[in-house]
Image (tube, rainbow, N blue to C red; front, top):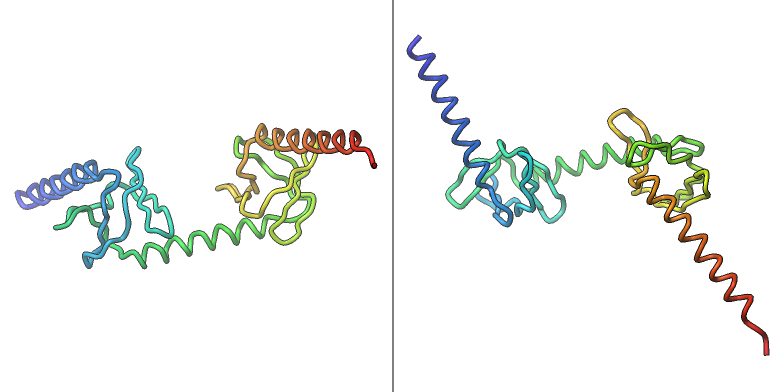
Length: 183
């Protein structure tokens, strides 16, 4: 029984030490991997999430994933391993998006509203039809949410502002053309 209490106390102390150290990970710090090589730089620390910029990805990691090494904060994976994991996650997310991105698919907005439907798809160029008009977007402007719903990474307000700006630009171009005279 004494050994179990000691083990539990040691685990609790180790967890507290890791949590205390994780709280000390600061923006700008270099993060090192298990072999002592740099993995990236801490870009932000918020709500228990430490975002590490590897130069290729911005990896959101739990603060509890960090330990203290001789040269600073450490994690248990190398830069190459972390980039590979993130590459795989991005590829899987893009595959889900591309499977859902079909003509006439219903699209939700970033603010959870009905954004419209996919009108046409030509390569990476996507036309989204909204009640107020159509807006041209790129494939990268879409994602699939946790429920499998295709969504555009803009709010309805942003989409409508884009449609209105395009209409105003078209009207200005038309009025400028009407004012020109041939000499």
